Amino acid sequence: MNPPGAVLTGVGVGPGDPELLTLKAVRLLGEADLVFVPVLDRHAAPPGRAETTVRAHVSADRLRRLPFALDDRGGVTARRERAWDAAAAAVVAAVDAGARSVAFATIGDPNVYSTFGYLADGVRARRTGVEVRTVPGITAMQELASRAGVPLCEGREPLTLLPATAGLTPVADALAGPGTVVVYKGWRRHPDLVDELRRQGRLADAVLGRALGLPGERIGPVDATASDLPYLSTLLVPARRDGRGGKL
Image (cartoon, rainbow, N blue to C red; front, side):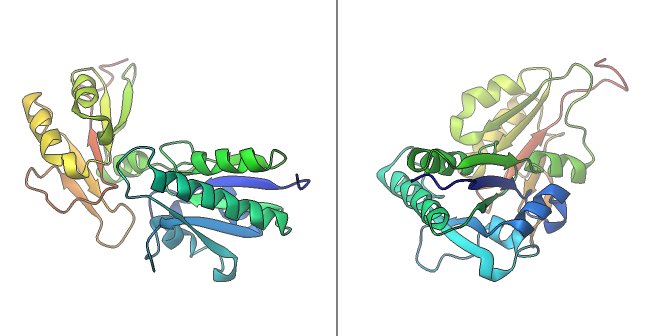
């Protein structure tokens, strides 16, 4: 079965502040027949960041939760695959029942380290006629740069975005380069990241953001003793800059 005209849109809703959604995101969320949001695959899971954010724009009767193994750090595990398959099946069931405009709200941007890609693949495999679209969202690195008053990149500077889950070597290589480095998902690797920042003389300029856009948000210098980092923390290490226009 391939229901005609069905569209699945991954909507980026930013890092947590409901005011950071684009006009297009707000419009599409308002027009969607259903809006799916990711939550932990746990009994009575609390609202996730995406759900908390879109509640300001979407009525509760149009919200549907999709459980994912968001805290699984083991790669492509059986638990993760079951969650991906179940989520895709739930979206397909909604389309088969008549929904023609279905949105999936994802924190940040749907094309940057997002769960949406796995969901979209599963839906495409089951219903080739469903059109998949995305609406870009403001990323955590943009929000942190804005709040900290630090330009992400100037002139010829490169900008490198890495997940700490990729290991310390890529981060160390990027820090040795000429540009700005942003590290997501620092969490358990925070002490190692701090050691590397100190070794390369980059610690003093680094900025750490925790729970951006949410109650309890903290933005400031990197604390080597931090022990309460959320998984979705953001580390921003600005490029070394000698003066105005020095990288032009």
